[in-house]
Image (tube, rainbow, N blue to C red):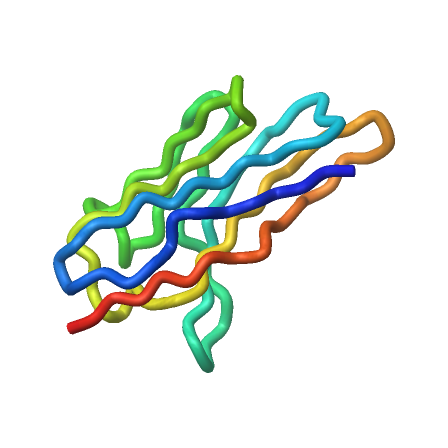
Length: 119
């Protein structure tokens, strides 16, 4: 059984910062890519940032230069540092990870954490 849990969301003012954390636990052999995805109310889910097991990162154009994704492989964790936040960043942020266990290889999702940016 694998669990993925996010934390760190909340309410922040325009221009502020938040750091999201996500940790995977369970019978994990390895984790390859880890991602942050967000979904604003009434909109489709969209990718925010991705990081490979070797540390290569990619970002959505809308967050480049403001958000930084990082990971700690020893802790099976991924982080999203969000700076210069804007109201349009308001969304539920989800973490997902491609995880290999003894039984399967699958993409696991967290439950999401709400980020609200006030203007």
